[in-house]
Image 1 (cartoon, helix red, strand yellow):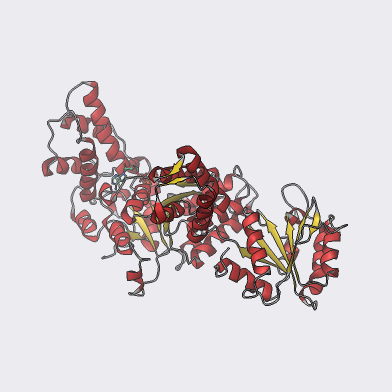
Image 2 (cartoon, rainbow, N blue to C red; image 1 turned 120 degrees about the vertical axis):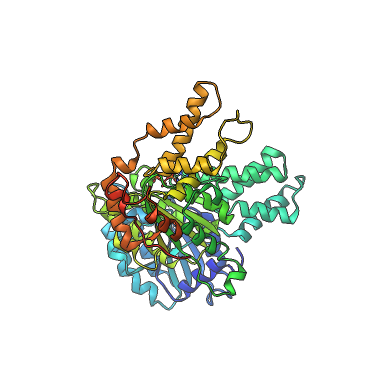
Length: 548
Ligand code: ATP
């Protein structure tokens, strides 16, 4: 633990300010203990050095020399020892949250009362005393909300991880190390997002599996990190080679994102531009919302983490609140990063829902909103939503997202581009060849014939056409694509009312993802305007048009 570490300074400040009960939520008990011991003995952090007493249900209090303090195993006796103690001391209580009511165990009100009664003896005693509750989850009894201060214990930063790696290398003197200082720094960066223990495990695995440290070790660390992050059940790394060129249309959205690229660079800070918080992309299903999120990683050259809110609330992966906290701190640890909150409405569906967990859902949601509002780490959020009806107004309030974009059915020009993307993608490599040339005539023809099709349906037309050709063991023909088009009943027909509803919502709240010129062309385009046979769906479009 470095003396100048921000965590150490922040925690020391709380202790110096005589906060009686400080609650630290972390899986990293050992790292937290190290920080606490370091603070307790560092006069530059805390004016009055303190003895550190650790308590657990198994041993009761143990002093810094490892001597057990008799008769302190019961929680009430432990509290009474804290009250009586006349030394300058930090009392670390491990797993004390179990007395606050967890799982099916009810809260122990005798313990809670005793803690409240002890408060003046801790806060105003002549000796300097603080109690630190150390636990892997946050459980604060309703009655002690005012007395307990929560302390965020972030995951280790690059310097801490690098230190652990250096220690490991030093301990294994015979190790063949081909990486050197610059390689070590990259390895440490690759392990960001892991706890110190997990990072050490990842390094150990890399060393054992390769018998040395070399370029391949990086891959092992990434694999290990993916595993660890996946284990949370709600967060995963998305690696994709999709890029802006793979998105047909949506020029407004793409331009907006392009302008915010590198917003955290030192160069950007010279322009005093505020760090972007995030964007909410909603709209018609199958029109490229997820595609845009996936392409962002390449567009910005940053890691992309996908957060599955639905799973947070499913109850399958442990405590929702802890899951949310851990996910957000992982995203912060790998920052600068992009956090993709997929189907954000699903996470909010539980609020007030029949599951009866509205309290939890609201708390988890509030945690997310507060984080969105206050986050300082360079984490850009891209949230995607299909069903806007469930989105609470507080999510849409200014200050949360920098912008809300609406992705509508593609315009004629966009349909052309989407065909271009998917035909070009599939007509390359050792492709069998075709009588078709990817020229204006073909694209105009296809775009004219697919009014009301979403991007996913256009992609499907290309795929189905190729299957026709493959079945007949001959190159792709225009008739294959025409046949696929004729066989498709687009979503805009089957779900026309839903789309009208979406547009009505978007008209007052969102910006069109489509470029202004495309929209104007749409309005004057006989094939795309009022004359279409899709009724309301084709007669007006959602989202204010912005001129970028
Ligand atoms: P959903 O909410 O149903 O997932 P979505 O808007 O997120 O819908 P995507 O998953 O992005 O839709 O689209 C599905 C697929 O359709 C994409 O993987 C892509 O292949 C194709 N597609 C959709 N829109 C476009 C587009 N604008 N350009 C190129 N391909 C597109």
